[in-house]
Image (cartoon, rainbow, N blue to C red; front, side, top):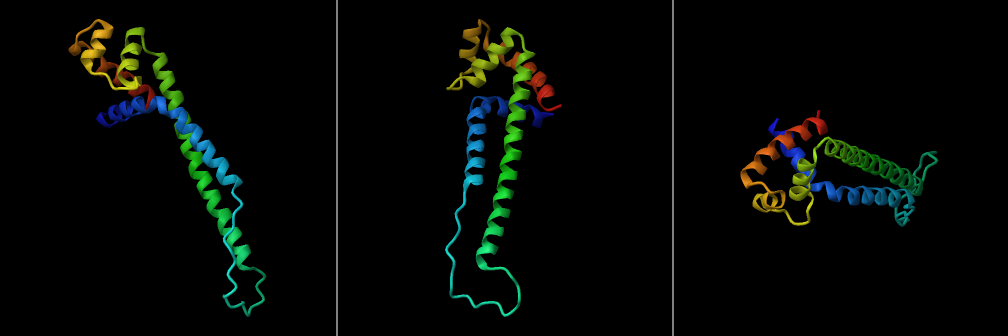
Length: 147
């Protein structure tokens, strides 16, 4: 349970950067799919004395295609994970009341991490109350994000 709460907090801290991460992964996928480079062919290799009909260029192309496919598959999995996590966080945020949402916004989404005293002052509560309701909010969101 503690691990889920930590993962939830980490996801909230990274939430504002998720859209950038998603766009960057999409760019990386596009770049890999558009990459048509090949290494230079070396002529110092001895030719094969068999009747095999493949060359070093063909082998390089096949290896390159396999590598690109593996990398694209890895990036697509990361992209799906990030998109799904973003949707889950947005869904969980939608379940919060206005005070809970403001607390999450002030603590996790601001450019500079605010102290509990600063969050409490903006919300009109003391620090201890903010920490107390934060625990409830994170638990509530954790159950929605990581069921």
